[in-house]
Length: 463
Ligand code: 5GP
Ligand code: MG
Image (cartoon, rainbow, N blue to C red; front, side):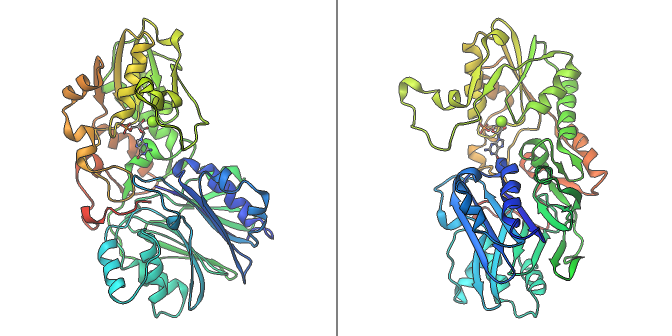
C-alpha cells in the first residue's frame, strides 16, 4: 500500500506544492502519515507528521519552507499494530555522498535476512520498515554513481517496490521486476513527475506519459532523463487487488483505467451469480463502480442505499455496549426509503475479516430490507499477502476459516456469492493488453510468485 509522488524540474520552489497535491489525490492509499522532502540543488528540506495530508501540511509555511524544484512525497498506509513516528516516509538520511531520501510502496520479502546481515556488520536501524534496508544497502555500496549504488541495492532485495529516491540533485525511480505495484510517469511542461496512480497527475494538470516498466530504473537530473532495465526479465505479477479495491477508478493502472476493469468485474458477477431482487446497492465508495456494472447487466435498478460520512477522522471514542454498532454507523447510514420492504442486493468489492459486511447486513435488516443478497466482485480472500496488501494471517481471513455456506449463516444474509477467479482474471485481462504480463492472485489462490517466495517471518511493517 502507500502512495508516492515525485517531481523533477518544477518552476522555482513549486515542487513541494505539486507533491502536496499529488499526495492529496492519493490520500486513499494511506492515511497514517504523510511527508515531503524537497531540494533546491544544494539544501534539502523536509516536513513529515502523522495524519492526513491536509493536517500534516495545514500551515502554509509547512509547504513554503520546502524549497526547490525537486521533491518526493509519501502517504503511509496505516498497518495493524502501533503507529510509529519513526516509520514516516520519505526516509531521509545523510550518507558519505550527501543526503538521500526514499519513498517506497510495496513490501520486501527478504527484509529479515538482509537486516540481520546488516546489523551483524554494524548497521544501526532507526525504523522498523523494510524500506530502511534499501537505504543501508545504497549507503554501503562502493559503486561510483548513485544510480549504480541503487541498482546494486535493488539486486539484493526481493519483493514489491515502487521507489522514489532523491539526492540533492537527482531523482531516481525504480520498479521491481515483477511490477507488483503501479508507478506512472508523467510530464507537466518541462517538469517530470511520477506517481503511484495517474489520478495524481490530473490534479496538477500533468500529462500521463507511460508506466514505469517493471525492472526499469529512470534517472532524472540536469542532464535529462535516462531509462534502462536493471534486472533480468521475470514473469510480471501485477497486484490484482489494485484493480479490485485499492486504486481509484479514475486512475490508469497496469495499462487500463480501473473504472473499466471494475465495471467488468460487476458485469461478470451478474452473469455468474445473478440475484432476484428489487434494488442493487453498493458500499460506497469502494464498490460503486462494480455495483454499477452489476446492476446494468442484471437489469436491476441501482440505488443509493447507504450514505457514507466522509469526514470521520482516525480517532473516535470506542463505543460501549449500548452503542455497539457505532463504528460502522459513524461511516454508513441507511436510506430507509430505498431499503424498506425491498429485496436488496448489496455488492461489495471484497471480504477480508468480514467485519464490514456483518455489520452492514444488520443495518440493512434494521432498515427494513426484506431480503439481503451479498455479491462480491472478487474471489474469496483466503491467503495472506506478503507484498503490501494489508491481508492478515490466514486465521483472520474469514473465507479461510469458513465455507461460503457457513459465511452466509454467520453474516445472516439470504445469499452470498463471489466472482470466480476465472472471470476475475478474464475481466482484468483488458488491462494486460497494454502492459503484457500476468497478475499476482496469491491472496485468492495461494499461488505466490515463484521468484519471490512468501516468508511468514518477514511480515514486518507493511507499506
Ligand atoms: P472486512 O470488513 O471484511 O475486513 O474488509 C472488507 C472491506 O474493506 C470492503 O468493504 C473493502 O472495500 C475494504 N477493504 C478491502 N481490502 C482492504 C484493505 O486492504 N484495507 C482496507 N482498509 N480496507 C480494505
Ligand atoms: Mg469497502
